[in-house]
Length: 131
Image 1 (tube, rainbow, N blue to C red):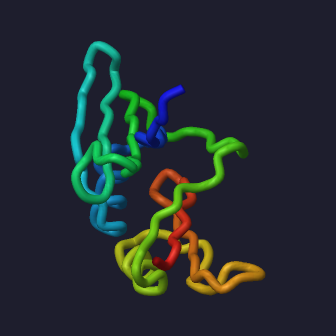
Image 2 (tube, rainbow, N blue to C red; image 1 turned 45 degrees about the vertical axis):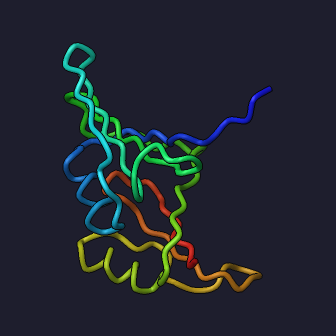
């Protein structure tokens, strides 16, 4: 068996421009590439940190299906995790940009790692972990 590598996590979004603005403006990601598929009635946008498709660098694939503006979240998906140098400052940037902070910066329960949780415009949870 060969060794694989993590490529991306796909989430469906109701408004591609709004979601791209959240991840790029508030979380500092870069839109790495976009693919519009009119025959399939969907658009894909890949976001991440740095240059795309580097070994060991995961990405988020935002999938917009034409005409669908919201999705039921379900209860199986947990959250995305993003390492940041200052969790409190990241929360403040999200809040100042109109985003939602659902758990303020502080130590993880029964530990010392500083974390927080925010939500993207579609309600997906993102854990911010101080690195």
